[in-house]
Length: 244
Image (cartoon, rainbow, N blue to C red; front, top):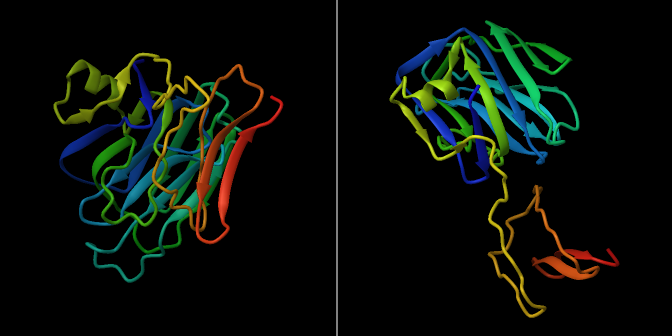
């Protein structure tokens, strides 16, 4: 199966020729990553908050299913339903994920870990225009944007369609992607500090209630200042290397 590599700025987006409505989904994929957070796959709609979304969240796989009522004459929309499976999945090993939904019943399997749920809303139909991986680009109805994915993805199957292979082979012409085919060594936005006086200044972190900070480094120095972010008053975040 074809493999896609993502460095945090990359995505693959399948734009459906027509709006899709489903009441049953069978989704599977394989991934590996060193990051504890990142979007694996999501269906998105231009007209509603409907989504079926898989993401890494704290080293676990989180499934979010939201069947919205914007376009459907139903009485109640209960908001997103979530399931979690797996743990410590950011170990750079391959993991297999599968989602099966039949109406209000849904199941998430990650390797040998299984979680099942029953939806409480009135709505059973999922609407979507896109299937997105790596980065969520359709954000109009999304309250919280998942982190971008850094890692490798393969064998994405959605209701029988192997979309990564279909995109690579040119069998469908509605793919948008800048993720790279093949197993690539992933170093996201590398910067080299060649002297003790070198530094990089970035915009202040917008970290109000929570944030996820991830970086990799290599050095031969036992001591060194890595990150400093100052906030209001005396607030700050600092990361430094001390005696290795």
